[in-house]
Image (tube, rainbow, N blue to C red; front, side, top):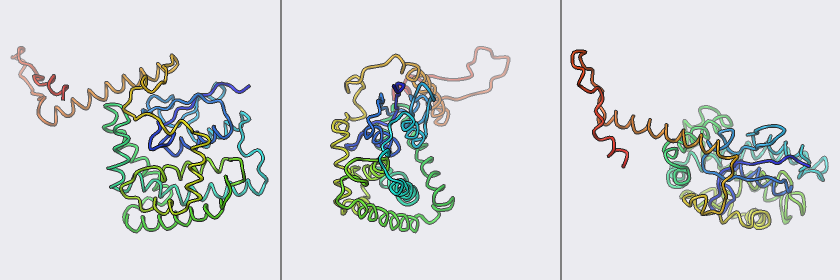
Length: 321
């Protein structure tokens, strides 16, 4: 019998069980195989045992953070979505997985994290509302920086020097990629017949956010919506394997209202999050106070012991703001 496993992943939104493609891939694979995971959907990566999302906590291998390694671990636990695939189908899986990494992932990053309109009005807005205070002030920006670095690893460090040309190239290659996926899927329910495999988890995790997000700049999104078999494919997976997850409550709804009970094992992560939040909040307020002149630091002569070095007369008003 498999050891109990816990999966920490980003919370759901936009009608999806999770807004993060990596988390979506792991969630979909787990549902396809029936892996007995205790899923913890959170909006604060610092509550994860690894500090990142997704993260799988298992008794035999500790904490695993890489999505592909999580799927590999599930296979070791006898939850293998590719068990019935032929050698040729296995080769197709590797080829299409590489194609997704090279052609579709870059446009996904660009659409959500680099495109200024989409990032400001959609991506950053969602994460800023979902992530608890005061982490929501800097975590979205840090996440954007990591995604940009991820894009540069695929496209080159200087790829953003001419963003307009980069966008044209990324979108052209991504359109060719999903057109190829549409042709490969055809009228089939899944890519290898009537049962989903690991390739279906990967394709779904890349396409579903593009399909469901309400993007201000949805040029590539419109191309995806022009391919009805891929749209129906994503809808089928959501309907069959996530019939309730698409209705997750908004990020602002308290956890108790969402119907999730607290777990004693999660308390250390909650405590760590609370301590870090307080420290970050205090540091941010102190920095703001110094920059705006609310707090001033003055050097006093040793002969005047009664004078105060730091004036904090407006500290309470600043905290209320």
